[in-house]
Length: 267
Image 1 (cartoon, helix red, strand yellow):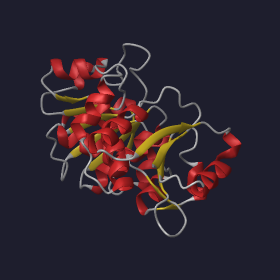
Image 2 (image 1 turned 60 degrees about the vertical axis):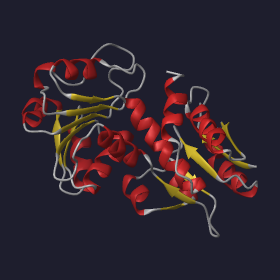
Image 3 (image 1 turned 30 degrees about the vertical axis):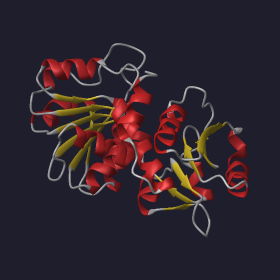
């Protein structure tokens, strides 16, 4: 049996186990997905132990994404983002580290029929999710404007992302007037029915992705839909980052609709 899993603290809320287990069952794979919750200062021991035990792959979540870089061989994208959310133990050498959040956002937007090459994209948030999404969009040819409440964080991230620019929240209306894509990479809208974007700045030519997946329909998505925009909920990003990890670990084409059904049944 192949064992895969999730490394984080806490992990009890995670929707990854049912999503991956559904894929294993659909394809008849002898595999299981389990969760691990080491103490924050036991990360290195946890990764070494997983390698020694023959675990094939791990997803990584809060608070370990950045610290994991020190204990794996990160690929170029994970190095640039500065965070790892997927570890692959299947090679001959040390475990390799990857970041599938970038591809998760890109594939979610593409499912919403967004043409990203040459697009003008606005990413709200310069934290971990914002970093991954900004790099992912830039790598497929989009021009990225990064907007953050603390302007200096937006500026700092923009210096690392090719052809990106950094802005404060007050710039959102002007930036969105000519934008093709909008991504909310903050947690705004998760706990309260609020949006990080003024409703009047939204328009029908936008494709809007909200990384928040609980609730599925955030105020941002509701207001974007009312203005004729194409909307993509955060569960699609969560799904596709998991699909990327699954395909890397197993070498199989993921049963995307089965994984999506398992995920949404828990939301």
